[in-house]
Image (cartoon, rainbow, N blue to C red; front, side):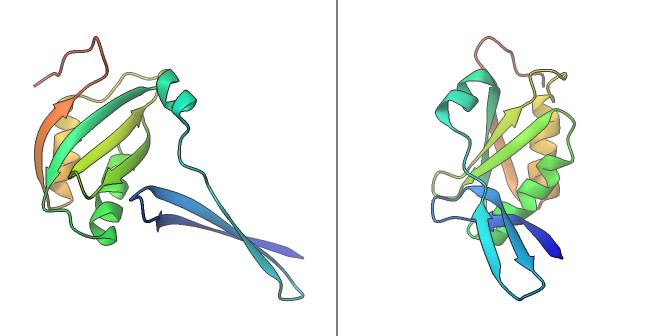
Length: 127
């Protein structure tokens, strides 16, 4: 029998919030396979928004914001840059994008101060 467990909030040293899948068998062996960060090619095909966020200082902060962002329709993935104090959000190209207010509210709901939102090129922030 094969068991699979997916851990959703794994923080790498670079600050990327990703996934790790751990597989095991009934003989007690296990392996872990991290989900890679989005590639530059994948990011260039998507719409990406950046939100300035103040007060983030640890992996738990990143996890809190990631959970809130994943609840917003049209958000594919998030990357939290603790050093720059930014939340980078991959937006679904097939769905209407979230408004700047929705993205800021998610940061605020997680307990942090949301600042400026930079939307994909050619799109205007809806305030």
